Length: 266
Image (tube, rainbow, N blue to C red; front, side, top):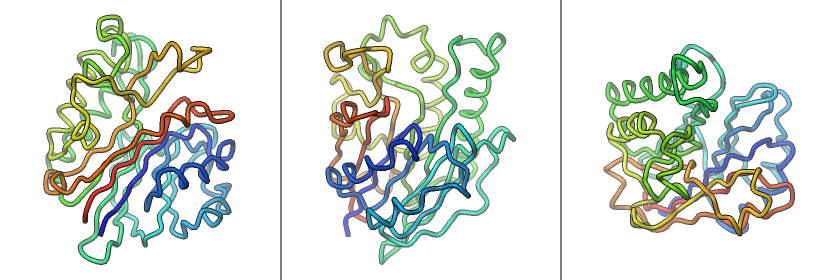
């Protein structure tokens, strides 16, 4: 069986839910992981999942910001005992087992803190929170090594030189600083494999996010790869294809992130 998993920071589900029709048409996913849904569970727009024929829905949301959701064509079982990262209960992680007909695949959907503007933990509590979040996820997966799992989401870090439009100019900018990259790499080293860079050489530019501040985002192309899909080492040989839906950045009222998908045999 082949399984296609898509991830997208939708930046308000209620505002952009109609775009899920386009996402499904372009990527044909079996599972959709959303971040920044910005909606409490009681107000979640269940109708959109029905409209795109994704009958299985899990969500963890709050009013106004953060929030994650998993929509699936295949049955889902919620992972109940996921950590409360940094003790904040701020709806940044949702995990579930996906029924594949054989051994299930665990999907982790993460929204890592953005970290504010100042890359200094003593001057910026948001940056300290981001670094602490990375440390906790790294320690967790070191203690519980993942198997048959896929981790997706807006991880808010562009780790490689060519994951940003200018490595030199962004070394001091939050999302590409050495301390963040070190933290993300330590997390990935706990049994994970970068599924998109599996297909795209590190020397090739690759982005999933373009700032709203760039009026003509396509012409300036000052992007960053903030959205990631990782698979466990036992699934790395099963990777078949990937797609970054760059054209989504030009949809009406777009998110500043675009969907990313990976297909693998399970």
